[in-house]
Image: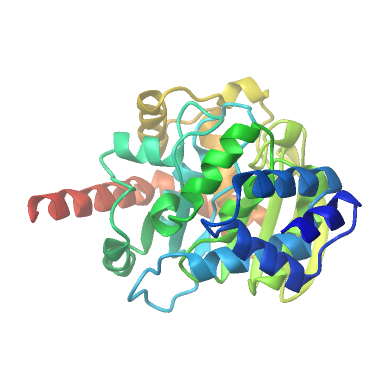
Length: 341
């Protein structure tokens, strides 16, 4: 590990093989914490490359617990990196119900709150959906509803120690970027929001290295890890190996512009109320934010030819009650599961 630390401290990038070895060492309980901390700090100062991030993601998937018996479907994950500090409500979790209602198979990776008042897992529990369920229950849910939420710590138990090290550091590291890349379910498509507009193209390159057929990376105003209704959203589209960069605004695709404060969230209780009212058809800034991001998800999954068409389909899914019906179906699945215990 010391050799890798020295190389990175000299601002030299690691090869795929070097980063793979370093990743295995970071996940090894025998590696001293101080060495891991020094490596992570040096890597952040140097600036992570797409190759280094892809090598870490592949290694983490090797160490992950498997989700057994998953059907071979073109799954999409719309999980973002988090960490933007903007306290927005749970846009991607809400959009997941809309996307599933539009016949996009969704395997969504998520966790408890870190920098927000309510993480996806906190919100789902408030809705009566225990996202911390055993991984053995994920496959039947995916088979029945084509939508499941996967609790990251259940899939990646070796990250517990890394989490403690990151807490001690208190600064962003490469692990802030890796969450959406290590879903234990094999993905065909991906919509990922990241909090670094300067890194959307390298992040798309990582998704290419990981074998995604089509994916969209977005970073909104002030580094928001979603497409933003305020200002410009920086995007990178991966389509069959080609990466195309562009920017987009809400007005360009027929949505009103709102200040960031208009989509601020609160506690899990408050966000659950916002989600339910939204899926029942209440139209406001929250609604339009979900339309924007669900529309991008449909575009990323190749279900529509344009983002505008995606927004239209997402709107139909809500207005016709399909998105709320999907929420109810997943909730009822868990209720039946609880009754059979």
